[in-house]
Length: 76
Image (cartoon, rainbow, N blue to C red):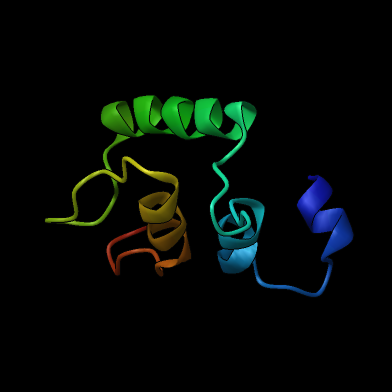
């Protein structure tokens, strides 16, 4: 919600890439690392939603997955 308030005109597909951005040589904060883990746990139940697409396991993979268009069979 805070990203949307700070970026009302930006596309949601950019959100995770910007949220996960860290300076060179630095790591993702512990809070965000835990969030990535928790999201992965949920996706293990729900699937990635994209046929043949493995679940994202890192922040980088999650940002790419998040930016993808929903599959054509999606109701969303």
